[in-house]
Length: 422
Picture 1 (cartoon, rainbow, N blue to C red):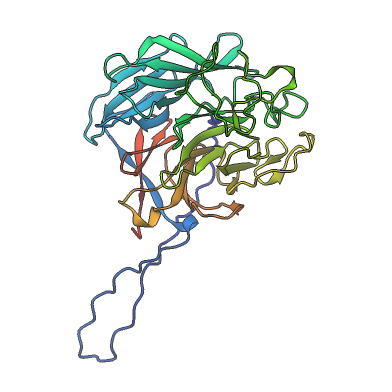
Picture 2: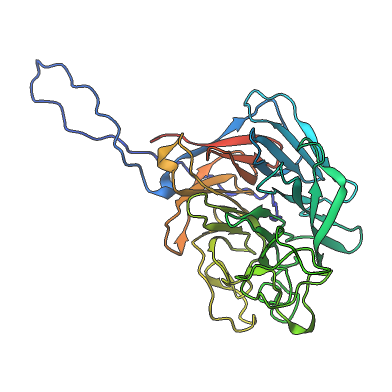
């Protein structure tokens, strides 16, 4: 999970939307003034687009929410992941006044700081396929991240917590940088994000976990949970993964004998805190929390090396990182003068705000700022400004119709909107 620091950056004034235009009035003092011209079709550049986080579902509050998503059922509901280990659901109705417990995993979740119940993904065919995949940390002494499959035995109303099948376990040397986001991609495969193992500077291992291909830490993984695995295995490695003939990770999240982990899809991440797929074209967007100076946004592709700990954002960090030379530049970055802990969102594909279509929406936990950059942005764009909100963005969610919502760690839910030029 992101560092969830409470440091607030200095607020900046919102950019004004100069959308007027047209010819001046005729030079005839006896004529009535002409009607005002219609707004121009174009709006300011992406970084100036004024956004808001309007309160949604105002009758509902949640305890430290860190995830927000809908299920793929015929009548989608909202699900909120509470860090302590509870998943709550409610109807997609702004007047909703109650939520119900979909799953209570507090008996096995170790929470606090950056630990807890950190991710949830419904099988794409849910509830016909009753499996729900969950990411959480556990262990009173040695901390472990788990990716597990559960089943719903009542048609999707609740999760049967007695059905757990642990798919992946990863030892966590520290309590922070656990990552934990999971999601199914448009290819039907399960993607998993893990941080670098925590501490500071990715100091575990000779070259850091982010660059070490024999560990699952500091990586985005991809596995097939539908194909029939070999005897003793719990999933199948997609044949197009970068190292498909490598070793499956062991019960500690490492490959033995210096092998490369077959589960790896991309690497070089510090703490990927929320990733998503653009529903138009399928691009994978990852927000990676920075160390002390830079927060970054990556468009992630198969086999890419996104630089940590060699670089923080697009800037040199620690050259003792294995001599990698194929580093992929971030799409965008911002310094800690405007924010301190990035939370990834979604590319907007809704209809309520046409000027927002095709822009990647994301926020900062520390400063409460909200941005939307063009999904075609050329690396690397330095981000400033942003729209100031009172939210502590811990997660974003995409509704079935493409509208984007957000969770504030203080317990409220919000809908992202354009405040003008829409």
